[in-house]
Image 1 (tube, helix red, strand yellow):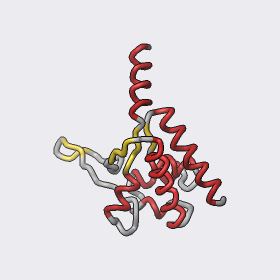
Image 2: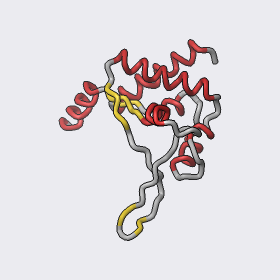
Image 3: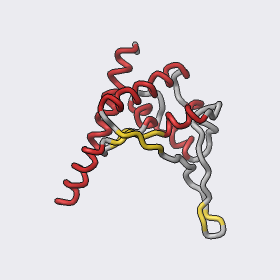
Image 4: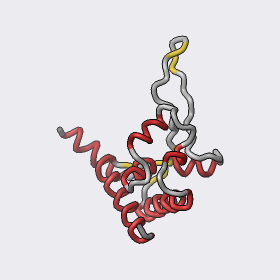
Length: 137
């Protein structure tokens, strides 16, 4: 897939996610464009994989390109960046409280890379429309 096709797929994915639920998540875009399978994503969420980039089926250059395109499209569209804390699924309670183990996206664990993967982009206008239509039902 060439760069233009990738840009088109990424922008389309972000747009459709925002139309459906009011926000776009980079991990969902990666699944939409075929860089990540749902099974491998779930393996990462359950802690069977040390970091997300390990199970993506494209190279780091393309991953970086996709993340940049998500950010670029979100900025042009006026979406608000919102950091999301990703924690491991399936943790049992210890002493009445759930354990929370943060997940890593990259091998290096560099804060700017981790933040880029964990930032969702919120379409505030669409969120208010969705809330309004849900309230009317």
